[in-house]
Length: 443
Ligand SMILES: Cc1cc2nc3c(=O)[nH]c(=O)nc-3n(C[C@H](O)[C@H](O)[C@H](O)COP(=O)(O)OP(=O)(O)OC[C@H]3O[C@@H](n4cnc5c(N)ncnc54)[C@H](O)[C@@H]3O)c2cc1C
Image (cartoon, rainbow, N blue to C red; front, side):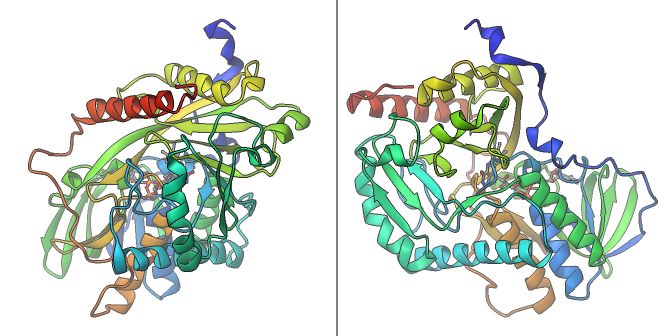
């Protein structure tokens, strides 16, 4: 097929999810001069923080530089797990061990319970499918690592995980590409933008104010709190929360030096016949790979399209180029989809901390919830909720397992990830080599 033929006639460079919830264009209303708690960033973390604060009797104000929900929260793959990815490092090992790891895993599972309870409580229609996840083994060597983790995962998170060998794999996925996998029973997928829309509506119903199109440009201490400069004037705030994740700029002290923004990409195919969709994803699982530069995919909530994601490029590039790369990766896994064209291609930014762990805390008096490490549907909601609880309850100790530890940085890092192309290309090379050494087709 010629390269140009992979694009549908109505190909778009916006997230396919925006057909289900389009981040709203707010009319430019007059902003309040004072805010009880001002939240910078209106994604999952920001609106979840606002929802908990408003339900706790406070008066939060959420500001987003773009349209509300425009960030990663309406662009992601919608895969939901409670702790499966938390603290994983690209080589496949764990960022932390021992008691801390146990606490982090237990707390991640609590995050998933909290998200599902929030969806239920506010009756958010977001296509939640509790159909589990298939973690696909990139090479046979990855099996041992997973076998050694699985008991902990089941004991600490209730993941309901089990190994699947290559022979059984066809029951999970219509592909022979992998060396088997791991089924995570307690997992699934949802419509990420509709989830966002439901959370925003719930926060507003509870009394929170939220405005898009307002960029926060500076934050400085002032008597009684903080003076927050915005693109639409100054606001006096009692407390400030930074919830800007992969879009964090030079706002609050050195926070931008503590996370690495990484752009990651997705495509949505055009609709396919129901029989073809069933044959590639017979159990409608969410799928993610164990390689260093992860690919992930799932069917759309109506079961007609494949939504396929990954870090297509580590250099800035256009949506048609990243679409062609992801289409090629998709066809390597599913040759039967070679004629399926791409309807949408888009990218978004995630935040990778130097210790690969999500964080909440206080930096020079300003609260923050940052560092999803690429898995933020559960986690950023949980961190936003955690920050709100800290403000409401003022506990003496940490509010959860992600609270309090300092976010590390590196003396040579000032917020521009100049090393990403080199590191990313190295990881891609290692993935390729691992497959070659296992005598499997490399990509
Ligand atoms: C392509 C892709 C696929 C993904 N797939 C998955 C997945 O399947 N499962 C999963 O769990 N996670 C996934 N993620 C990660 C997940 O989407 C994010 O972790 C999560 O949405 C982050 O939420 P957030 O609220 O912290 O940040 P965001 O939703 O990114 O919101 C941050 C907001 O801050 C705003 N902002 C920045 N600076 C300012 C300022 N100065 N003033 C005002 N506003 C500002 C931005 O405009 C932005 O809207 C994926 C991410 C991407 C990009």
